[in-house]
Amino acid sequence: MIHVDKLTKFYGDFCAVDHISLDVRKGEIIGLLGPNGAGKTTTLKMLTGFFPPTDGEIRVMDRSISENPLEIKQMMGYLPESSPFYKDMLVYDYLMYVARMRGIPSSERHARLKYLSGLCSLSAIMHKSIGDLSKGLNQRVGLAHAMMGDPEILVLDEPTQGLDPNQIVEIRGLIKKIGQEKTVIFSTHILSEAEATCDRVVIINQGKIVADGKMEDIRENAGKGAVLHITIANAEFESARLKLESIDGVASVSLVEKTDDGLISVTLDCPNDADPREAVYLKIKSTDWILLNFNRKKEALESVFHDLTRNSVN
Image (tube, rainbow, N blue to C red):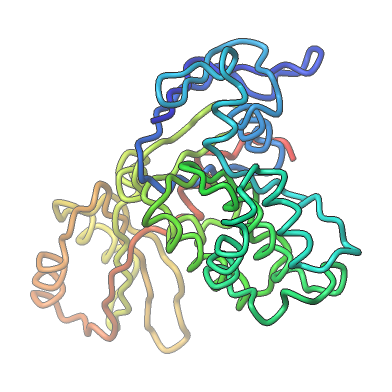
């Protein structure tokens, strides 16, 4: 649906976006992740036609954005990081104004506003001033604005920035609901949000794509598999490390804690989703160690993100 080829943007001598290429399929929810200053907002502004690229090509539905900018903008709904509201207007009046600007026929405007007020849970505030709304409600109005023209593609720049946890959950649910019918691209630096919402994640660092795919695939490609946590008694760490590292699927063993009463807690790194739990249990069973705790969890997304963006400059 969207084809981006070697997209590049310079501001003077500074390269904000550095020859990125990607394809977005119809119906995907894609999260554009990266630290502050990574090039996320600049990329979205080029995708929506707000910024011309220094080099590279963007094609939407096989149409070039440089040759068909108006046609492509009509396919998109865009919620920028700072929503450009007229804060002295009532929500109803503002959305009706947007409907007129979008060229929606007068006979269809009321039905469109009714649908969007229900979708974005705005019915109770349609006659309130935008300036009196909370940040979360402002974002809902912004989403209604972006959806007004019934776009095929929805582009959202940091849609949950500045929201409280409850508001984040609400906006996340709304994005997933919209994503059942639309192609959605949104930027964020909230890792849990991307993991919970996206079909696919694209991580950008210093203007370049450093990872692209499903979160599980990115973990695997980064060598981040599972981590086993165990607590044992009657064991010395060095002896335990040697025995446990001899097991296939255990890459390394690290000491987490050693208590005064002789307990040791260790982590076992298991790359590429190896699962040596049975072998670990049998190894411990063959000794005089006492197994007190044993659990497995996926490597945290934060660890993968840190490894991929550790050289970022904020």
